[in-house]
Length: 71
Image (cartoon, rainbow, N blue to C red; front, side, top):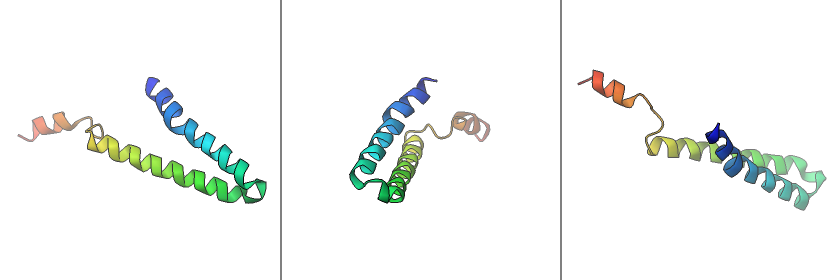
């Protein structure tokens, strides 16, 4: 539950604030453009989060178990 709060606080909330700012700047006539930018931003964050998890070794939690069986 704590990880979910961290993800919501540091990833989702800034994206929503950015979406509100972009929507305020471009106006409702360009709502589709603003939402496309937000969705692209979320996709980039998702890929970065996955890449960081793999790089730091959190991607495969059973690595030691598999390593033990393949000696």
